[in-house]
Image 1 (cartoon, rainbow, N blue to C red):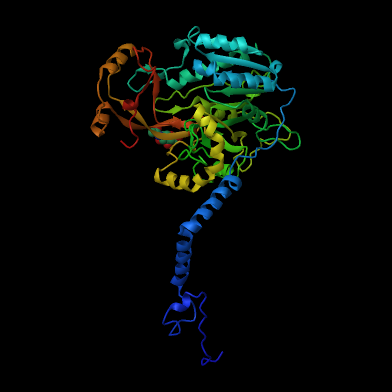
Image 2 (cartoon, rainbow, N blue to C red):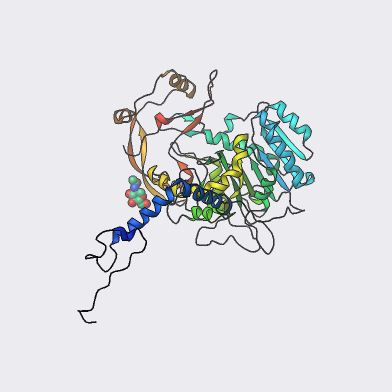
Amino acid sequence: MPSSSPQYHILPRTSTDSLSPDEFKDKPLRRPRNSYLRTVRRACRLCLRPIYLLPLLTIFLLWQLLLNASYTSPPPFTVPAHERVYIAANIIDGDLITGAWGRSLLQLVDLIGKERVFVSIYGGPTQALEQLGGMLECEHALVSESENPLDMASLPRTKLPTGESRVKRIAYLAEVRNKALIPLQTGKAGDFDKVLFINDVYFDAADATRLIWGTNVDEKTGNAMYKAACGADFVGWWKMYDTFATRDAEGYSIGVPIFPWFAGEGDAISRNDVLAGKDAVRVKSCWGGITAFDARYLQPQISSPNLPLKFRSEPEPFWDSSECCLIHADIMALPSFPTSPAIWDELNGYDKGIYMNPHVRVSYDAGTQSRLHFARRVERLFSPIQRLANWLAKMPVFNARRTEIEGEIIEDKVWVSSMAPPPTSRSAHAKRATIKGTPRMDDAYWHAKGHYVTANRTATRGAYCGVRQLLVVKEVVGEGEGNWDNLMYEVPPLGL
Ligand SMILES: *[C@@H]1O[C@H](CO)[C@@H](O)[C@H](O)[C@H]1NC(C)=O
């Protein structure tokens, strides 16, 4: 092209463009970059006028509520006519037993079919259990904790570096759960296909059947395919509760507990499954207030001496793992039962047959329960907010042992106490109770208590479940006191 060719100026795009007095002066051939910015700004200004803003907001809201909701169209499933369900619970809230929880339980028994259900409760109070027992039409074993207390002497004890021996709160809770499994594990209740654990939650009976038979349904056979499947529990319509037992597909703790709950760490398998609206979100562990198990893992099997599994705790001091997380770790450590089709083969190393089904939601108060449907209409809006909040709050919480494999030898720091061991656990407890106020836990505080040495330890199963803390049972409970202690003043920080 000859260099003398005439240069053309672009014509004004809108009438307002031509208002500029120097429009036809030395205007460059291409629009300058910031003129796009100006266009955008102008568009925004226009939109922000109330006359446009209102309809735009309405359109956005309608789109969000009607088209961008999540977990509003659950896949179909059928309640099979032959499967038997063992329902286990450790509820200790009398108002719930004789109220909302009890009503939902009766409905659930009805939905499954009373001849195919066994209800086992270890809890109380006694009167509420008796009242419920009078209404249950299925086989049941309702055992009152106050009349049949746990044998504290039989619980596993943890030795602290000071030499003191205590019972972990988790060891107690694990035993409480095992109590509800006794009729199943002794074979007294018969054979079952599924075990359903229900916490002291508000739940919908139809949702419970969805969890049992509507999670990860195989298209050909119509069977729900899982080793364990849990619901999601909420303390507010926007806030998930279960942070202690839930671990994502790679063993990370959850993020800030608003939708999509999981953190975006690693491959973000679980987070992406939630965003994709899956009814079987792949996880390493979850509980969510309601959990269904393939019953074969929890009842005696002639073919496997490792079964039935029991709930358990982690004996190491300063390392607490939820009994509800360890049970999943134990299930995954076992060979899979043959299923058809065999979906338990590892898909990319992540599909281990433990799933969260976010269609199934439970809560801890009636108000939240009634708002859970609304939550599904708006929760997608939280996703970018949660991503930012995770980053600001530095979540998920770091766990140095997340990727440890059972049996590995790990060189680690082990705390050695320089305190004299207390003479007996009773007097030690009495002494602790007299310490008033909050000690200042600075370096001097810890150096007076002990020091770290480097030592080898063997990695345990389910290391991703653990948290650096120590909750113990109070074996001498004073008037008006809680029945467990948080020994945070005994747990030295790793950075010392
Ligand atoms: C831990 O074990 C490894 C080998 O298994 C050994 O090289 C190392 O010295 C041990 N560390 C300690 C502190 O004993």
